[in-house]
Image (cartoon, rainbow, N blue to C red; front, side):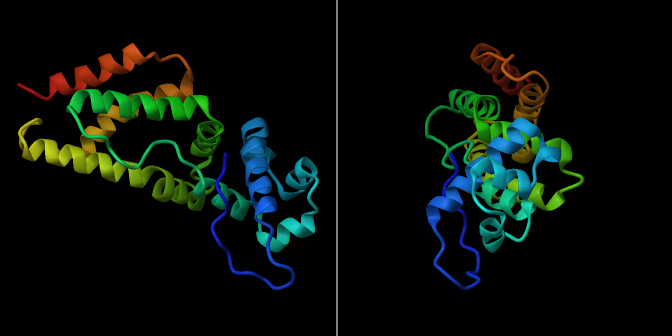
Length: 198
């Protein structure tokens, strides 16, 4: 589900109805998931919701603005990294990301967006900054602390370790959604961590 849209400058007239905003954002996600990025438009959004195009255009200047707000409202993983032993935490984190990408509308929206990133770089930037980056920063900090505490080898690049952990799972989520099991994610994380130690 989408949370309410970020506030945009009000253009006059009657106050905005938050319920309409939420309805439009949820419908935008539904349309992209069912029709793809190429099948999304304000016209189809109006037809899907029964909300007049003029009402939508009073809130957003374009379809991309609608999608920007829809992306801003997504939550795939918790931003906070739980305390505890490193390996179980990483398994849970990677598995949570995989489930979010393959088992939710938010994840399916992102799966449609990623191949289109070169045509809509501003949408991908919002996805990175508001959906990916907060949780990623928390994970990088936990890994940096693990290096300082001796849990991970000295000199390890936490940013690159995140790529090693998430990259193959992200690829699997996009190419064969639902094919990975929790045990396979556990094996993947264990293999990566084991390989870091000489």
